[in-house]
Amino acid sequence: MVPGKGRREAGVVVGVATVTAAWLTACTSFRMSVPADVEAESEVYEAADRSLASGLLVDESFRIGPFAVQEVDRNATTGRESSRGVRIGDEYFWRVGKEALRAGYTFHLVEGAEKLEAECRSFTDREKVTHFGLESIDEMVNLRCACQGSERTATLDLRLTGRNPSGTVGLAGQTFEVSAVWAVNGAVPHVDPVGFRVDGAEGPAGAVDTLHPGRIWLSKRLGSAERRDLACLLAGVLLYVEKK
Image (tube, rainbow, N blue to C red):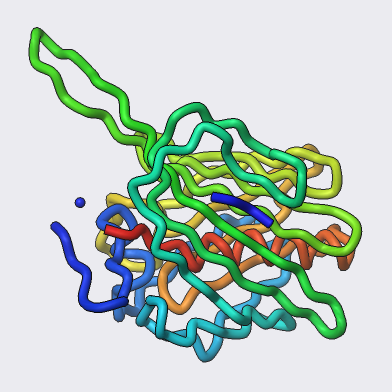
């Protein structure tokens, strides 16, 4: 499998990230406004039985359409430097240079008799920036996930911060582009992304609404295994909580 601001941490409960506070903690009627082309080509599934709490002693299992997210396990790793990246088995999928490993979690995604093993890690890449003689630290938070089945592995590499949060998905030998969605169905704009869409050469492959409880869209063009793989990666995005 994969190796690996306010401060708040009570006991073993993991603090919610500032950059994603709107994602997982808002008890709100706001929903992500799904792009029209995604909606036209996809089936939508809403998360059910999902807890607002998160942490080592919290049961974070939930269902999303035909998929069950089970055995969510958050480890407490934080502050460790990584120069090797994310690995499944003996194969490395990313070599990330020197970044600070902030947090991680594993889970299983189950559909019928099929089970995928998944692991996600968040990293913070820090860069010293000088403006007119004044130094500051620019931080970039990245989320990397991998979902492994019996025959193949799907991967997600997502930049969560900055002016243009974006990334890539590796799925069935193809690379898909991931881009942020800010639009909501209410009048109050969000300064952070409320979801992400996934696009390939043939059009939208899916999307995820990160406002609790969460929704995912999966393209009708995808095969059953591809849908399961993408659902697993999008579940990894839903589960993202940065450790403070």
